[in-house]
Length: 202
Image (cartoon, rainbow, N blue to C red; front, side, top):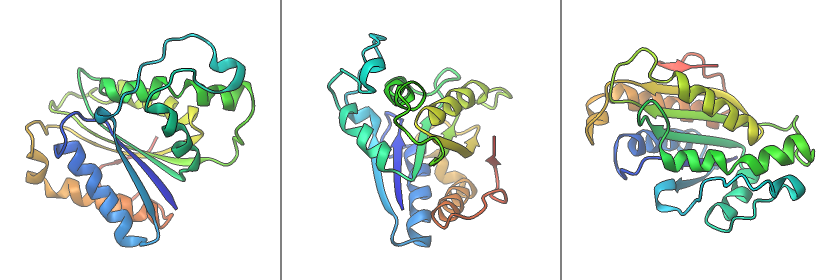
């Protein structure tokens, strides 16, 4: 099993990074054979989509940057984990660039029919917001839903936590980390995740 984990926060070793590591820890503990590739998006050069339309001809993006190698990793993954904090009720710019550049994969799937739509991956979203706004995650859920669709993944579930702001605050909420470990373990064993605390299932 190949897990591809995207960390979309610019704050390394921060709350989202720690939450993602807990998910990975849970997955490895329950399935020692799992292969995890973690990518810190803020450390990569990924240009946003320039809407040139060239991918509509071949299914390949003409921009040459760090996203070029990521396409192959997405293709090879069984599970995609997207982790991002909330910035102004949205995912971060680094995460958004990844989403936009997935247009080439959308073309492969829906225009060129080069992807077997029946052989879907699983998509997991992890997110933390500083405020406790009721609609804090409404917008990002839609973005994530269509990102996973573009890369041929089922949006399987999300852990969404409010009221976590300062670096290290996640460590004051160990139950959130426990939820992430449990989710990672169940995903790695291909088991039902509906009984995970704080899980959102679309």
